[in-house]
Amino acid sequence: MIELLTPAEMAEADRLAIEGGITGIALMENAGRAVADAVTRRYPNGAPQVCVVAGPGNNGGDGFVAARILEGRGFPVRLLLLGERGRLKGDAAEAARRWQGQTIPASPQALAGAGVTVDALFGAGLDRPVEGAAREIIEAINSSGVPVIAVDLPSGINGGSGAVMGAAVRAGETVTFFRRKPGHVLIPGRLHCGVLRVADIGIPNSVLTRVRPSTLLNGPGLWAEQFPVPASNAHKYARGHAVVVSGGIASTGAARLAARAALRAGSGLVTLASPGEALAVNGAASLAVMVRQVDDAAQFSAMLSDRRINAVVLGPGGGVGTRMREMVQAALSGERAVVLDADALTSFAEQPQTLFSAVKAKLSAPTVITPHEGEFNHLFKNPLETSEITSKCDRTRAAAAISGAVVVLKGADTVVASPDGLVSIAENAPPWLATAGSGDVLAGFVAGLLAQGMPAFQAASAAVWLHGETGIEAGPGLIAEDLPEALRSVYRRLFIDLGAWP
Image (tube, rainbow, N blue to C red):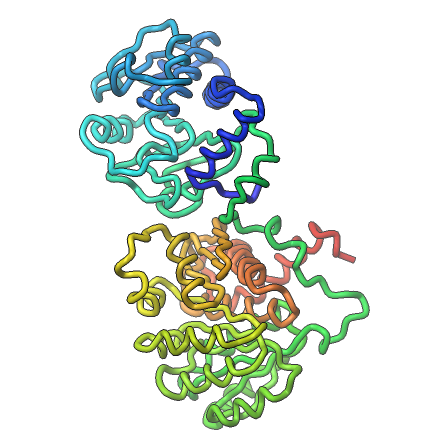
């Protein structure tokens, strides 16, 4: 279940399911039962007062169903409604009609004495800031100190962007339906969800062929079929040759991290293109990684005339300025995969269209850019600053279309976007990945997979996921040097899962 449905796509999935013969009230009954099951799992022997806080829409209807089922199971239930019962419509009105218990106007005071709260105020479709009485109730839920189970999405979280719309419930558990939403995975929404469960409410998977979601959860299910598993008769030249451009003698570490990462990721050969002044230190510090003297763009172009070189990384510790811009232009002039990070991106901050034009001029080989938020904002400030795009997914998708590159917007919820609109979101990055050199390793992972012929969007997504897994494997206290070494254990597990382990 890698598909992530926007609120509009989820509404379409509901519509198609109803069109196919399942009634809306049946979907609501199934959703409410899933929520009631979550409460029952947590309290199998019964619980103190269950307080269901229902909103005026279908999310509130799910809450009415959950309240009725829980009461039937012997739980003491109090139902609070935000708004007037008579103004409920459609399936929510029918769910309210089936509830035979008392309905109390929602207020912070009415939460008193609850042992567990079911948040059924607003679902994933919330698109405006929470204000007034709704905000007071959300703040009261958060300050109550009792466990909270959210219906679909914690109220106040935007289902498409994960943004907090003024105020948002902090849940210990969230029950959503059919598929997750981007707001469950993107920060800060993810931090409000607690344990997330996806319930089957009767929507057939076949609706996805018509919904055609373009936002996906990053993991092996997304890219495993394209992952480059070496053949038993493979040799190093069949696995690609990646080149990483090094900076001067004072800044070789970042390039060496990227080079080692590319080699660990599976590139058959890796060469550091090193200025003469740094040749000795790069040579002494690198064993399996080769070193070649490259002082300027002309020498770099001559090196790249070797068609066996099929992936290049520029930026890590490479220096900012004219030399870097010329080196990037040289790399982009041929049909090889190019990964641009750090200084390579900063060097074009004042002239991004020059970079984008060069990227789009390439006929077939891909370009991947790996900015953090600061670098992203510098590169795309002009085309995006006047737009109303705020979602990280939509910003990254727009940047990919503008630049012609696969864009990896890094962070705790790294988003990868392809120029054709496909997006993946990662959720496996541990906090200790935020350390010097970590991004250089990621650039190397991307290049190592590209060198082996993996398609660019899948290679970038896989590299991001592997980066997170190596962070988990290395654990707290890791430094960037640990990440390529941790990849061996991650690969072992992955290859076993892929059925490719000897």
